[in-house]
Length: 172
Image 1: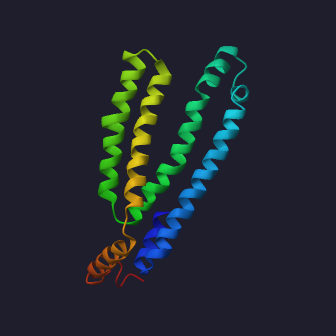
Image 2: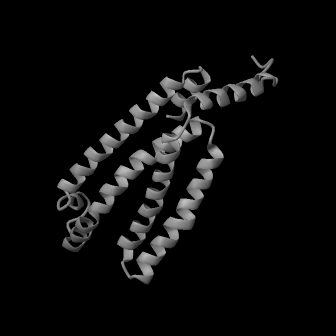
Image 3: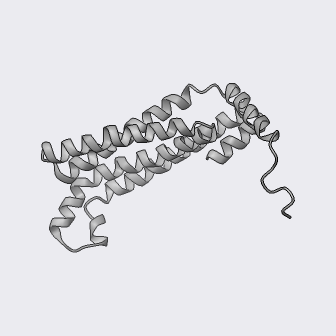
């Protein structure tokens, strides 16, 4: 996704960049929801692909809703991260990733898993909390993006690189 957005921004097409973001985000979200629904419908049977154990099957069935939510979030969040990278917001994405996972997801998972004694469900829920926070931040930033400004910023970055000597000059 980041390549499509950056290409459209570099070509001076703010409407195409914005449209690409909407299309790929919605497509990814819809596909993730469909897969999650299938997983939820098969929650009592899915573990039998890997095991015959009744205890394992019961545990997997109990955690299937977390898997479904994870699929939806992890189907959307990487697309939005790619959009941000395509816009040149790499540092911002890095800070959001670090903050959401290390300041929210891991501590929340530790708290839920060990302090509240929820075990694997608690640890997984904490990480989902970090991913949810990251996704919400990226959705908010993407919705507020001024695509005309992003085109102007991309043009400035291109101009800065045009003034440099290409790395591969004379290496045919």
